[in-house]
Amino acid sequence: MKITVIGCGYLGATHAACMAELGHDVLGVEIDPRKRALLAQGQVPFHEPGLGELLAKHVASGRLRFTDSFAEAGAFGALHFICVGTPQRPESLGADVSYVDAAVTSLAPHLRPGTLVIGKSTVPVGTAERLDAVVSAAGAELAWNPEFLREGFAVADTLQPDRLVLGVRSARAEQALRDFYEPCIEAGSPVVVTDFATAELVKVSANAFLATKISFINAVSEVCEAAGADVVDLARALGHDERIGPRFLGAGIGFGGGCLPKDIRAFVHRAGELGVEDAMSFLRQVDDVNQRQRQRVLQAATTMLGGSVTRAKIAVWGAAFKPDSDDVRDSPALSIAGKLHLRGARVSVYDPAAAETARAAYPTLDYAPSAIAAAVDADLVLHLTEWPEFRSVDLATLGAVVRRKQVLDGRNKLDLEVWRDAGWTTRALGRRTPALSPARLALVGPAA
Image 1: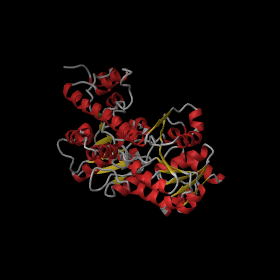
Image 2: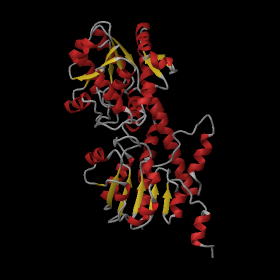
Image 3: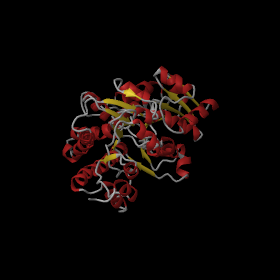
Image 4: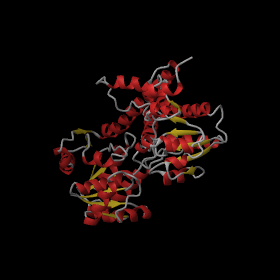
């Protein structure tokens, strides 16, 4: 099919390249000239594993190209996918849907009768109902098809989605989307056909559930720490319950990024507008617990440094909100680094992919070219984004460059027993200090 993708940021660029991979002819509409120029050259303006190769392949083949013309888009596409962002509004917790409104109203005068406009952006429930009038007046039809991408896995999530939610109002629209997604459906992706409101709510409900699960285990980790229990062992035991499952039970410094934080806030805000704010009030606590984790790291770091971080050198490993991404939006790692800097610490940050985006967001911090370089003369190493390379750092080399062998694992991913055996003082959120290993006992000798 001939399709357009309106808005070629993270969601749109991924959708455009992957739909070209599935065999469709794709025209991306992007009004940012810098971003559009990069995409037209087959270059991805952000970090996402596997996407660069896919984009370059289909730009070169001619199956994927980019424009800033809505008139060209209207003449080209039979299906138009709206993939613009919906950030948190600056004056409230609600979602800013002005980009969605602008995309639809800019496209509407150029729509051909009988074409289909499909919303993929995450929007407050009721948005599709409002936009339907604009699209219908142009002789086209609206559908809502939310995205469920995980940063770092976006290509796989688009090519082999774990579900396809189709919010439609006609059998014709449903069939058009089934035909469009035929390769995914034939590969086993389940399809849920529903109404606009339900389709809109699926995405925010999924994110709210995941955020709740993360904040639950983080709240429990604080109890574990106070009681001398171990949250990693606890989470492992919980995960064996098939009603709960092991995913999203990794205790640590909490969630960030451009989706979960703003989506749960927007969900609460929209519930209030609908008169049912009490039903979603628990999400405020979920958000509070998440923010509290950052404070817990600051408190733990202060304790490890003798009561003050002022003038201490702190190496921060990680800036992106998660590995395999350069996204630093609402990043817990950068938030903690920034607060340490404001308290007088000398902070050196290293991230394998997010150095440039981090520097743009926090220009006053120092940035190092490697994990070892960040730790030179450090009094404390903070592990705040779980990039695999941090788990394989050579501890002998690291120990030779730091001032004090202290590490705080904010993600509960390091093998702290190995670190202790190498002479490091360790701490992690929600963890007890385990019994000394035989190797460590040999180093320190028998108890008096």
